[in-house]
Amino acid sequence: MLTDILAPTHWTDCYQCGKCTAGCPVAASLDMAPNQVVRALQLGNFEKAMTSDAIWACVSCQTCSTRCPQSVDCAGIMDALREVSLRCGLASPAQQSVVAFQNAFLNNIRRNGRLDEIELIAEFKLRALSSERSLRFLFKDAGLAPQLQKRGKLHLRGKKVNDRALVRRIFERCGDGK
Amino acid sequence: MKLAYYPGCALHGSSNDYEQSLRMCLGKLEVEPQEIKEWICCGATAAHALNHKLSIALPARNLALAEQQGFEELLAPCPMCSMQLLKAAKLMDEDARLRADISTVIEGEVSGCVRVLNLIQVFQRIGLDRIKPAVKKPLADFKPACYYGCLLTRPPDVVKFDDPEQPSSMEAIMAVLGAKPVDWNFRTECCGAGMTMAKEATVLELSRRILADAQQHGANCLVTACPMCHVNLDMKQHDIEQHSGAAFAMPVYYLTDVVGLAFGISAEELGIDRHFVT
Image 1: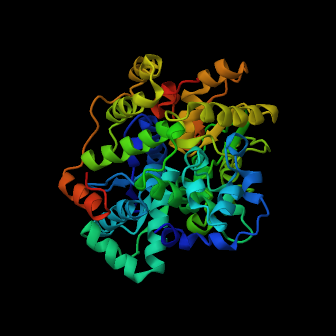
Image 2: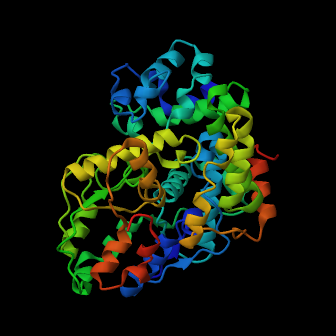
Image 3: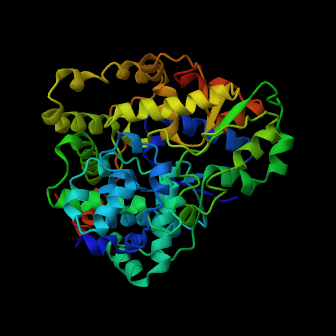
């Protein structure tokens, strides 16, 4: 399954020049550098890559894929690893905040068709609370609300699309029919 | 110029100052982008990170809507949206089976006839020779650091726009406005993107580096065409300063703000008074 989804990324062509890692804006804080993630795959150590923190810390800036002399789509590899890691329940517990945010985002779109920012923040905070375990985290951004309100940037209810049933059908057909 | 408009979630959410600025600015050039009816979210990072098929289907649905509504050109001012739309179109162009599959998923056809444009491309399409005569107040005091971020130029095989390492299209527009863009190093570095809530520390550090480099190179403002970059560099700037001890007080403008100011539109009409750093 993982190798199928990885196929378009040309992951086997990597010759470990390290250019991806040299340009990666978050490389210094990763448990595995981008080239190490690719190497783990080449050595058949799929689980090591899928349980890494790195795949969730990646900011999807596309610098690695842009600079790769072998046209390996390293950012695409990160996407594939995140998708399969989540499906197999292998996502790093230390990265639950990112996982919670991305899940909350997709749930929001499934329900509304478009993003409802307040709903997103509320769902994200509640989902992430179990791993962050602090009230400080829960209310950290609350001070922003009046600031946004003052600037006409706070929308208590987002505009939903009319045909939300179609949006749900699209999600179901993509294997996400919660 | 008949132009479809795909605002995306940000421009209808907390980045609605970008939409205000864009409508005011393009209005002066007699371009009125028409919002695609029933558009849905492109899925952004959440879709491409968690569900590859969804990351094609969601943008494809919007391309199908634009086609059905008779458009041939589409403005997606958010670089994340425009990249996702272009990526879906490219993947379907390369794979007839995928195109058929996606058309079943979204209950609509995407023939591929709609040309997706980012904001800079719309200015290029209008023509810098038409923008120049509209300049009423040349921006002689502006020394902007033109900030492209990630997705205007990357991945290059998808967006096919400007140079991914040394872009210059925004600087060309600045020159027409009479501004003096600075030469600096962080034009295509990442601001931390959608990690604003989930990994704040990443955003604080990556955005700090961008502000610091712009400041070191003598910029007195940043110019961006991305709503997410604007959030991280403007809304979070106070947090960045508190966290790092640096002092920037660097205004961050949308590209349409700067063009609009040069056209003589007021800061209030453009929504610049709604930014955090003013």
